[in-house]
Image 1 (cartoon, rainbow, N blue to C red):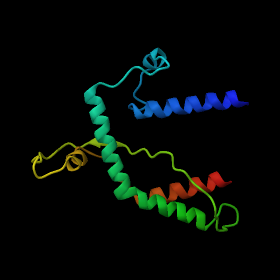
Image 2: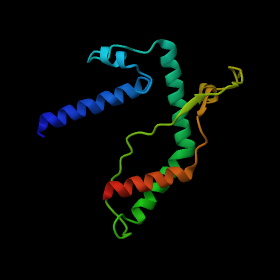
Image 3: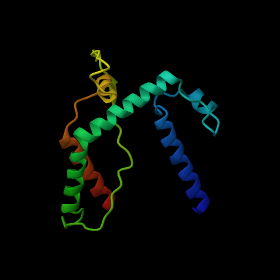
Length: 151
């Protein structure tokens, strides 16, 4: 595979990232996928775009408050005991390209007064994670993923 193969692979990767950012791959019908042109001119309407932005903001807040520390701990455990002989690993850069958090709208949203609350509080009250998150799952998944990548 030459440079053309690398370029085609990168284009597919970029297209998948774009589609995920526009609402995901799973909800698209096959006819819609086949009917799309290369420029991805089909945009979400404004209400769907606003809901997606609110969900992304809530997911980012969950990442910062609940998951980031567990990801760092998983990385540290993987580097402390390497894949082959449990040797410490140094000088390795791991890039976590993306994290997907399943979000759902809360059933009961409290009406907050606009003068006493910020937009972030309103956004975080609209969405929650679909299932309870456990830091131990994040640690174990990241540790085993890094170990497999090093092999």
